[in-house]
Amino acid sequence: MKALNGRFGLPHPMLSVTLFLIWQALSNGISGGSIVLGLILAWLLPLFTRNFWPNNPAIRRPFRFLTYIVRVLWDIVVASISVALLVLNPTRKPRPAFVAFPLELEHPLAISTLAGTISLTPGTVSADISDDNTLLLIHVLDMEDEADLVETIKKHYERPLREIFK
Amino acid sequence: MHIALEILIVVLLITGGLFALAGAIGLLSLPDFYTRLHAPTKATTLGVGGIVFSSMIFFSFGDKSLEVEEILIMMFLFLTAPISANMLAKAAMHLKVGRMEDTKGHPWEQ
Image (cartoon, rainbow over all chains, first blue to last red):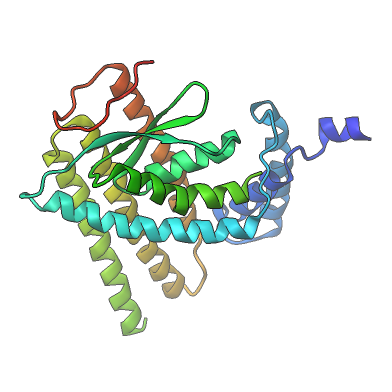
């Protein structure tokens, strides 16, 4: 039974659910046809792409993830305004910097989520990761204090992600 | 459509447009490649966000049916924007693109 499930079952239940919901949103109104096609896609796509997901991404606390998204959206709004003000003010020069951020996260999916979040919040872009996955290189558009920045990222993003992924 | 909704839609459209404009100005005026990388990938996040959100409200209340495709636009944008920014930054580091003289820290040699 387990071998059968491995070959024809649902290797990634969360991925299947997400795919199904995305298909319903894409197909403009839920109908019988969209549900059938959504189920087929939710079953086949994870099966075909299984080789690209070597170890299961494990989200422990899905609801914590929702509050994380809200916090990131809020940070995007705040940071967008400060970047826009900086860009529109000709008398202020940016103070760019490269910062090596020491990672506490270990799960690859958690690290890429953190890197994506850092890139999404205006003013910071994650540029590279060290070969041993312990440092994340971040380019900052306008940096006041390095320790301050690292502490903010740790507090706002890394610690919640540590609780979400385990 | 209620007047308050129309005002909300207009405000969202204008803020979205302003942020997109700020992104374009930043692309023009910032001094080096790495700082220019910030303007379009960032200010546009909120720019497109505002426009997409106002479109969602307009069509949801105009056609009296909930529109959710716009959320997908946001989702795909949020998934792909960081990756393209990361690729650009990596390529720039690989090519050793010049950076502002007073940049603190330095890119890695890998």
